[in-house]
Length: 106
Image 1 (tube, rainbow, N blue to C red):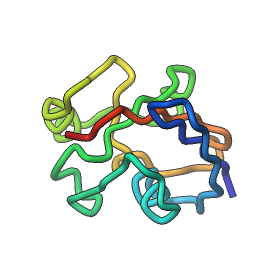
Image 2 (image 1 turned 90 degrees about the horizontal axis):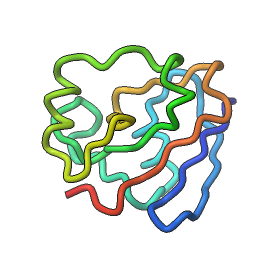
Image 3 (image 1 turned 90 degrees about the vertical axis):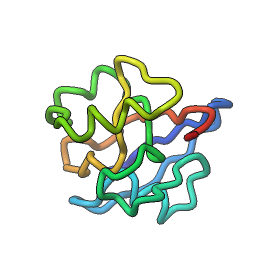
Image 4 (image 1 turned 180 degrees about the vertical axis):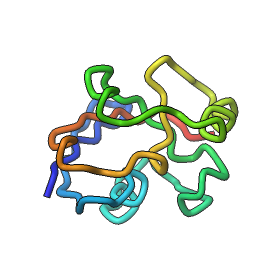
């Protein structure tokens, strides 16, 4: 299983093994990663799974769709490397991906 590295806003690193095809949001929720709420359950209906993806990983993630772009507009601290974790499905190519969590999801 690919390893995903979550880093919270204080710099604490949590590494979890994630099954192929599971979203980063579900991986965070399933592993009790503090800072990912996932209020909508992963249907891109909120922005409570906002993460910052290390730029070197962007080519492996696929493009943002219009709905994700719209939802990111509801986050407090959008950056160029912002994504919604519910829209990123884990693949073998993502082994070792690093995602940082914002200080708040609201």
